[in-house]
Length: 336
Image (cartoon, rainbow, N blue to C red; front, side):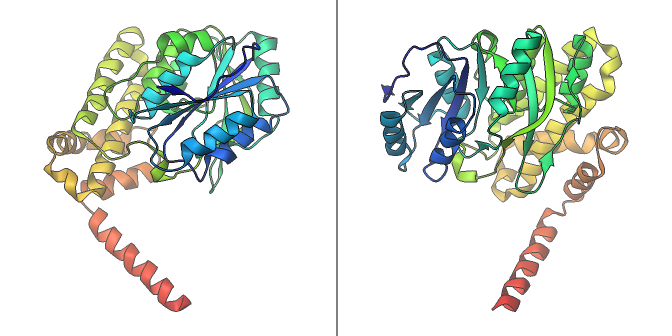
């Protein structure tokens, strides 16, 4: 592991964790959004996760001109391993947040607002809104503070007020250092967030849209489904058993959580022809088809997700893709 720059030990208040992979087109914008914050007591820890483009060279140039940025180069181990590496480097920062290399903070007052909130109310966790190219994602239009863990867990399972991703949040650093793990499957975010929040003290949410979330396939280390991703779903089943032992009244929320993962995996498998050869395909699709009643009756599944369920269930992805391709070609021909 090569350290390309070190942050001076000045006792920054917020640490920003960035995992970067082939992010030459976005990494400067990403870091600039931190530099643009009106609150300047921060440190950035970037791990270049084995990029094959000019990401590392760009980071080296940034480090030379910005002492609050630390850049580290590692072999390609995946975004979650890269985050863990960055977390281990953090020193003397009370709070920590995550920023993907192709995303950026879209509100320059975000850090200032968050710091005011966490210091006034002595919070261990603070969530906020994000937006995409299509829309702003408002989880609530008022501040929310959770009085008990059951209500907090209910919101986490269903995505109300708390997103399952590690981003869009400010965490107390010592909790992240202690509870953030690298799992063997594709998505570590939810279970890490669960462990951190359930060990936290005071938690809250503020309705400020401070994060721009983009989707650039080349920026993530791995997005395709692999055999070991069945472990993610199996872990979710073990997890909800534990939750229901303590809170049996959260049965609908738990069913939504595990079946939402099942829906995501089934959608990925249905989109990619080569996945039919994987053992995971038969297992996930069998589980998916046997849970049809839950998808259609659980009140947390909205119309959009129920339509997705029906498209996968009746194997309509191929037909819809052909129709969409024809539509795109027709539009292109009209332009020409």
